[in-house]
Image (cartoon, rainbow, N blue to C red; front, side):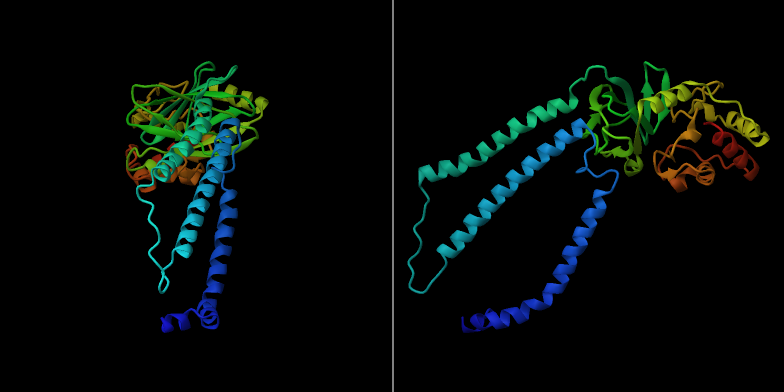
Length: 348
């Protein structure tokens, strides 16, 4: 006991603990800097950018505050009991409360009441996030291993991996899967919703400001689950209408000799068995629609930027870029590879 008193004396305690103060302050500063940097991330959940995401964020804040209140209450009671009933020389054993029916019923009902309050708060948000909205734009989203297909049925537009929506307009998204269970999640616009084979689920999106919102598959679906990314591009209505008009048009004919040669490479290597290029004989649906692939920001479902260099790298050996993807390696010659890159780079 005397040794313990010496260890925890005021002077000795300060000398023992002060060497930990700088590392703890540095750790706190790093955590704050990391938090501020994370807040600028385009996929940061706590930076909502639309009505569904705002509703979820508000609910999260309420639940967080309630959880903190419960935590502080428990800690406070624990600290009080540790201090009030600490062992002291000559002190009697504290009176026990087992068998106290009122107390036992009280601390049994307390969690029930808290959970009931949370349920009342959560249900409107849960159903509101999936409720149909009037005058909504309809989009059919299909999850594939390991890419996204998007169809605008009323406009006759099909695209892949990048979802364009008009700012301020509710978007009704019908969710389907072509193979296994996926889940669509755009953190700043709404929560996660499953895509189940043979079943159509729905969610709705609405972006308040023009921006590029990143999303991902949030249900483990295979080896490239982490590489199944997407982008939601929210833009003013006139820009969205112009994009729709471009996407509805067939692919332009190649204008350069390398691109014309690349079109022949595309056709002779059976690329059209998996991909569609509107205006040509290519009508495959196993892979993304490539009619306007060069106008997209990324390739391989968001894994690499869409540049001629990265496009050539992807065509040369997809398994190096995205191991486990179903895109085969054709082992093209350098000439054919350059020509195919030139052709796809003109599909805007």
